Length: 329
Image 1 (cartoon, rainbow, N blue to C red):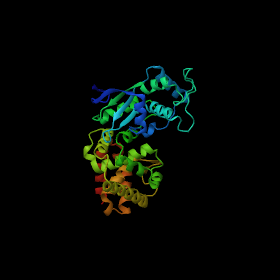
Image 2: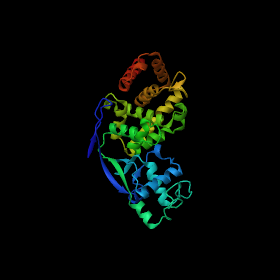
Image 3: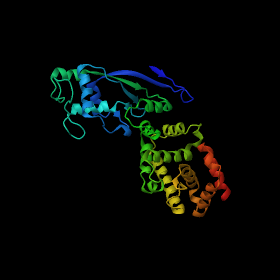
Image 4: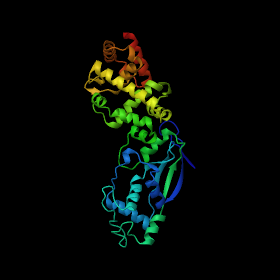
């Protein structure tokens, strides 16, 4: 097993990985069994048909192909696809005989003797060549350092999509809590009050609110690590806990809307994530004792205070916000 260590980010990243060779027919069977977890940001099949055909052709005639990068999922023991989903999908579609749009998958621009053929039409010898062709996979062990996995995704993903931290979290920490965060981010009132923030940004803002409310003691200087740790500890919450979080969120945005209006979380002309976090924490902690007069006075004091907007440490900001609240009641 190999250990890769980097100091680019001010700490050493421990990522243990190993290599494994799989025959094509085994990878296809695992795709059909849904043994691979394909992150949402990778799910669109974008390869041109000639690209797909060349990949299949290379395997049949024995040319080397790039490695596929996988991570062993801690929860399910399935494999998270870091890089290689276009290749895996190409194999799956070729064996099925059709593309996602249900058009026939026949080879285009391939070696003359197999050009134009589907998998079912390949001569037995060529079909065996493809079935037995080996694709090398690099597998990151399930004991990975979540900080390191972020940088693995960022550096190895070749989907052409610029990845956002929350998209990576959704892949690494998939489970009931991430599903709830996605659900809350699609709330109609929240969408209006957050200025229709993009889905991944919206999810991260909500996640930050809960992490600061429930686990601020875990903050050690990196917001990214702080959020990752929160999800590590709360990846698959039960229905009672999820229902409690759902109620907290609903109460907070409804109280803010009732007392402060549609732009409750705006500073000037734009939605402000720090303002949301401040209001979310105070409303959630003081909900039973909080009236609209107090909440309005609290927000007005936030606007008048110049210091809070300069604080970069979210935990210090929460403590500062609590002191402001205490000063007005």
